[in-house]
Length: 156
Image (tube, rainbow, N blue to C red):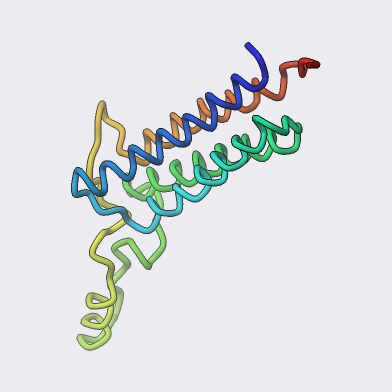
């Protein structure tokens, strides 16, 4: 397989995950939490890098594509940990500790809480949440980017 084929598959994989995320949001009615949105940014970068790398197959663009896929996989893994209560997520989208808050401060915390929480699983398949699937599939996509780096460029 050529370097360009790997790049097209990798960028296409990120594009497919973005389409899937937007389909769940707009067709399935599952609003994304803050960390779900964070996971989309590296995919956008990977698609743009892939479009550039198809025409300009520079190793730096391909390496940046791999980095983008690994970053979104890392965010997805962090999100899974928050969903599973392995660690606490950002207080801006998770159930924070109540502690010794007075009633007014507790009310303010409740009112400032987002409607979509990062520590609740909105959808899962085969035991993995959307964040988990993003992590797994993004690691596979990173493998495609790395395979593209390992292929010797063809001369035209």
